[in-house]
Image (cartoon, rainbow, N blue to C red; front, side, top):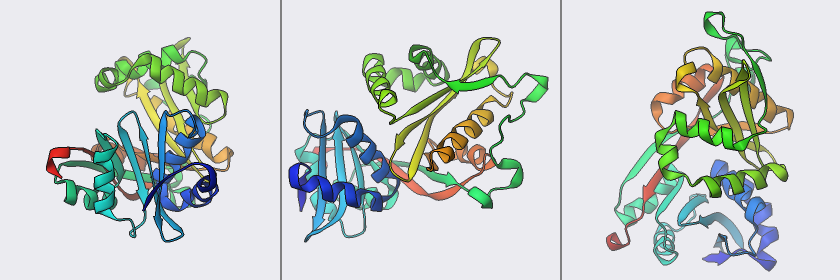
Length: 276
């Protein structure tokens, strides 16, 4: 059964959401950001009897799935059609079960988590990770100008620029930072922003790192690795375990060199109502 989260179900949602992995973290962070009373976020619990077996969020047509093996894939697929889903994401095993009903297509990549003491010694975060070619390491610090961060993200990734509305992005990230729900960092060299990263989602135990970008003219100098170290240390200092979702498998090798290890796969699919 899929039930709207509100009133009497909020305590059960808060109590159980941490059981549903990294996408449970994302859904909880969305709940902390938007709440459930203003109509922006559609938040549901998946119930098996009186037990929560998963959660689903819908934010502007994008659905996030987080559930255990007891979740009903047919029910989830029907729900996606009923709420006007355009795309959905979650751990790969769950998305594959839903996709078997929808008969659409999925693209997948890796989930990674901080390796802690099991990480190679030379991959553990350092206060000042070296940069190549004698370039000064610069100073990593909280971002003051989110507009400059957005511009760097667009310059580093044209697909981000094509799919992301600046006003909506700025509103969300500004709100999250004001309320301690996200942390955005930049690296400056000679008073110029050359790299950025952020902790974009948090719950009581996990932090999801995202938004790593380096000015294309400044790549190959160790700035990205330095920012990974900075954000990882920032998450650990908050008592949170750092995690991340790669956009493509090829990026995973870089993150492994930064001390992260494979922790599964995630998938994203486009919903096609006609295929149900």
